[in-house]
Length: 139
Image (tube, rainbow, N blue to C red):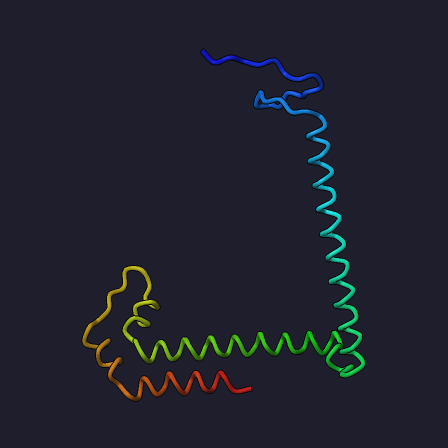
């Protein structure tokens, strides 16, 4: 038989039926608050360091700290990533044209094996894929 002990004076019952002393809860809350305060102080220091670094950058290279300049760079990077993705897709089509043809087929369509092999071995078809990709990659 399991013996059940009476709660200590000042203990609080949790929703699981366990008992905690109020002092234990207060101590845990204080530790949590202290930890939070330390994290806030740490983040404040990091923010201050970043502000100092930004001021240094502005002094050395003011054009690179210009928000419009940064936005323009991000836009250019996005465009270059899109062009790279298109070029990679074209290379994948050249490497495995039959799989690419299959991926473009609509539901219910069937692949003609003879034509698929012809396209996969046709230098003209593969060259056209490369030309199209190069044309789209140009500014």
